[in-house]
Length: 119
Image 1 (cartoon, rainbow, N blue to C red):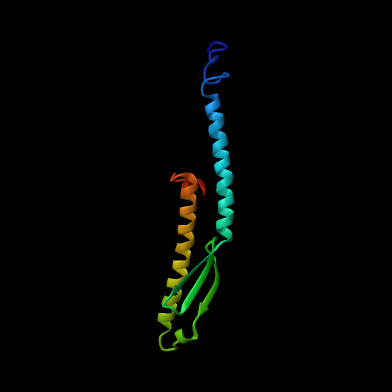
Image 2: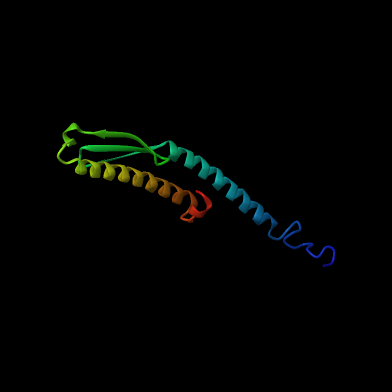
């Protein structure tokens, strides 16, 4: 290829160079905003209850941080019901956290699906 073949084109001072730089700046800002939002979401807690007798609180990282069981729910004759109620409360709290994360990221990215990128 001859020397200077791209002169005046997209690799020169004009063309698409300015647009690409602007897009890169926007992408970098979006990445910074996403990291900040991700940190905030991880510090948040999400609460759910089941059967009115079990309350679960999970962190934004999806870890169970608190579990409260009303003593009235403890029936030695029906431990399975209590186990199911605990599972339901924990799963609902986790779903709330995941929904909050997806909603927040969707607002930030304008609906772009970036889940494959680790966000």
